[in-house]
Length: 433
Image 1: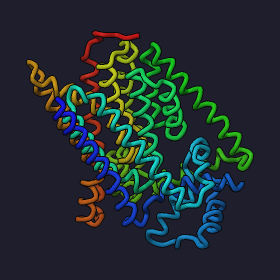
Image 2: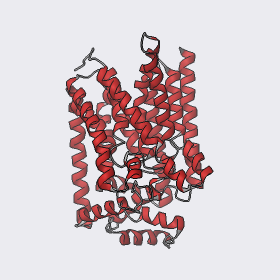
Image 3: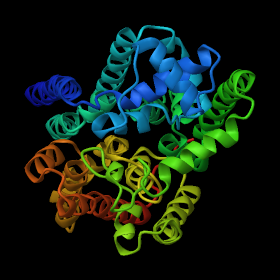
Image 4: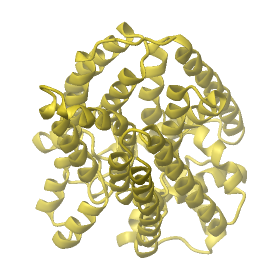
């Protein structure tokens, strides 16, 4: 077992090295590298210097004051303008990043990349620790695959890199019942930055009851305090921030916007493509009233089943991992998410390892193999490497772009259905307070 632990740990370390190297290279060679963080940085910096972050003209003025010029309104530079100047980050996110916004851009960029890299590697290590005594090589191999497919975290600088990491760290703290206050703080920050990523995980701990509900409520209180401070801070500078924020979201999600899932919108495709079910239903009918409703009609009953099972079951470690595996994929499907959000699948590694280890039991072989293959498909189709190669070969042609929108949502839906089935069929055998 010592040899197996060393092998698993070496895979984890090697994956971490590749993760940092690939992410840094992607950022260096991509003309839009760290653009997501630029949006956040200049949005927060606008508030710090008493400008409205949800007014593109005022954000552009802060950008121009720092750089001496504005990106041209053509080609790649036009895409950069759409991302950087139309701020869609919540006031809570702007508040939390304000200390970095006081720093020069190059220093802030470096600190942000270090924060994402360190937190994600720590999250992977904690997940590996869960299986270090039972299946260290299996955990190491899956984590290696996740790490090498997560370079976009460092390339784009999106808040998902930090939010996913903090969410996984919080889950480890709560499930292992260690460092509870650190877990509460991590989950609170994640909720404040990206509630649509961390929210469903928070909901699990709220519904499952016991002392886990207490941790969920504590996290909610801290998040509410952060939100109150953020709103007061922003309202002093931009009293009309709410309708302006809503207008920015509408502009990003409308036809031709950078976050529109329709087949004619370039912003929804590529390496960091949109992976929600809207991307597929928009191929049938490119109308929000159709593809949004269709996605919710599929996902809402599945979420309801998951909630019922969670409410009926007390907490056990085994059930917790099955529940988190199901919701980590299911939460990505009904509304806007991109490939980097899918690193939430890190929460599914323990469940996959459990089913794989039980494949030798009578009648369990098919379940174990299905768990592995579905995990591989979900990680690969929502990862970076496959799509970097695919879009380099096809040069983002129209047919290739449309095809590229399909595998990730399908793989995630199959993954969610499988683990929801496993979760529903698993009896409660060892409830814990």
